Length: 171
Image (cartoon, rainbow, N blue to C red; front, top):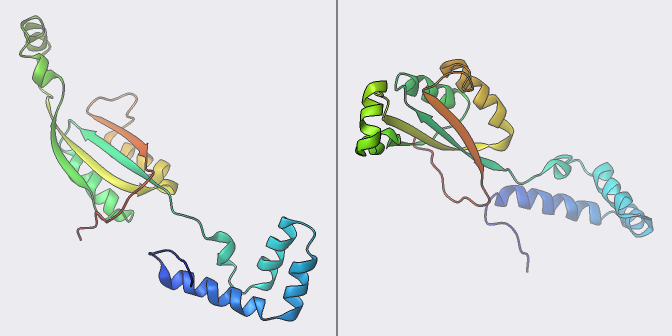
């Protein structure tokens, strides 16, 4: 009985086939048995395999990217930018800033009216991104919105993702 991942079955079978081929070579078996350290065993596998990808196979890590936009004009440019960078699915939520609710509190109502705060409605984009693209995507978003530390109207943050299943691809 073999135990393997439920996803990437083809990749798993390639690795098993490569290991099987390596283990059928008597010289390789002797090298493994005589290897003095774990590192030597690892190096023997890498040196003797044609599939160097075995050493590079990693579990892909993701981040959950949140983009909150009070300036709706940014929405389509950001969605287009995400698509250009391989992000094929996102959820867009109609959201409201705190001003929408505190304007009903008498003490704040007059202050917000005085400030002519008009940016209560927002769009929140939520999408799963590869961790390796996090910095690049944020920099690209700032090319659309301007420096987020200096301008108002948008906010970006990410969260660690410990588990995900399914897809947000809608295209």
